[in-house]
Length: 259
Image 1: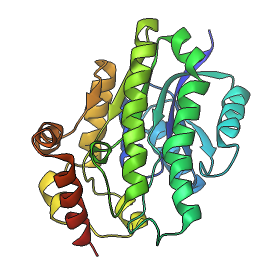
Image 2 (image 1 turned 135 degrees about the horizontal axis):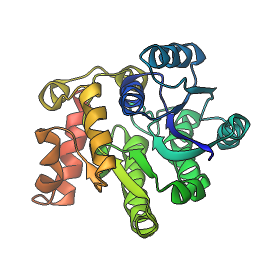
Image 3 (image 1 turned 30 degrees about the vertical axis):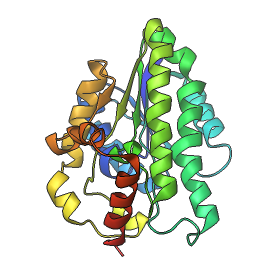
């Protein structure tokens, strides 16, 4: 029988690292993907030292063309099949879209949308055969319009919609599909995006480790969506109470405070 692995992108920091630890502690062999080979190697060594099977390390910049092919080739060379796909990699940029670097914003689309879609579809035959699953990391931002981070918010709206639709298609074939929608999580995300965490992070704060644990439990339980923390769970409900125009105005005002 071909060995099965859990593929995790963006595994070198934050939620991705914690997801790797949670999956490994539950007996999954991992294939870890991120740009920073040194961090992946250190994480793989940590997991092996804790008694887990040595992960496959795949250094790869997902913003570059051919990333999906590189990952598939590495897995084929290792002689493994994918049981679970965890599309965690993603980033955002803070500022007005027309003022930010266009190429960097297209990079958001490449990582947050294109590669996520590629990997979700590319290994679908593996997932069906192994009755596995997909965990796509979205954001509470996917429920909102996002002036000040327009491309990022829009990318997470895509993740939410795509994951829910894929769940309806793959569910009858035995594949679990879950979207994780965390709020602000202390990580390197804010640094790369170009802003410091504000009062929203303090109020809605859930640690990366707690987010990862809830995400794993939700995927194994075949939940449609995982919204970690009570504060985040009420956001979609509250949005139904206000006109979209008001929400747009409120998000714009909130983002202005970060400048």
